[in-house]
Image (cartoon, rainbow, N blue to C red; front, side, top):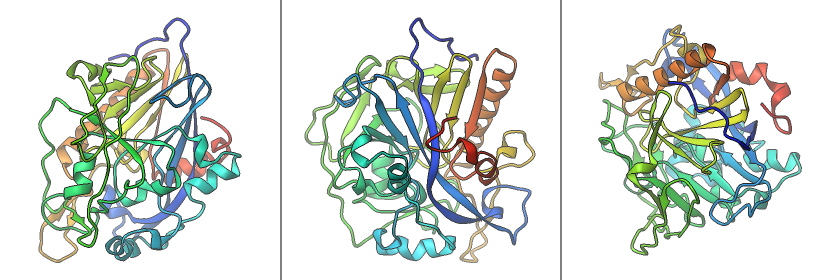
Length: 360
């Protein structure tokens, strides 16, 4: 289950977390045990990843390659579609500033300095403001664009989607994934804003050296990077991963359970250290040790149904256990894996000195 050792001439990346808004979360929805009355203001983190000389989709061109993982919340509530503006009031108070772009500008960077943006999943507190990054290539997990266009079966209040989210962007989706579709747990459902229609355009792109094939099919409504079946490889405890740049520096991890298309990144930052960017795989580090666990809660409509913040609780539990296993394996080997997730407020408070422009 060990991770691969450095190659000859191995490239390493830097990872810099930064604020991309804050939201308020009721603890009882995300893990147990918890206080049903406690609400916590947590960050929606974004991460700047810098590679010394990668080229992806023709960007970078052998110079410093910069990509982001997640964009947090939108800079202004009015940038959300009306149905989402109504929903996000349930997560008040919300701090929309600094946005992802605000934080980058404070560090001396701008939107045009970002070559690519990987989105862990398309929930409102992770997708941020794509329109601020029109020259960046957006990378989505398998099935994410279908969630945006079609929603998910049923009703619910924590999964509402804007099908026009990436209308002005270059969007590429990883796929296909050789596994069964994620099933839906009770009450974990979604809506698409009925007042908006999908009008995304296909974008051609290529990734060199990692088993992808370029898809030039103009009939595809959402740009896709079609991964050959051989491109998805087991890595450590993870059944399906992709070597994003082909040099072992950044791996895309399929992390099913929270939402279709949920992906994580595993970044090699030194010969003996990795950073695991976990999106919404878990929400508190104690979930890695078993001190806390994924929970269910009563449907807010009063129907009596048991709800879960994850669309597939069992798959989410497996994804969580894989991260926990990875950390344990690293403890017995000669390297370290540091998991960081989007909303871990304890980690955020303890690591202020490591935020952008500093690195992990």
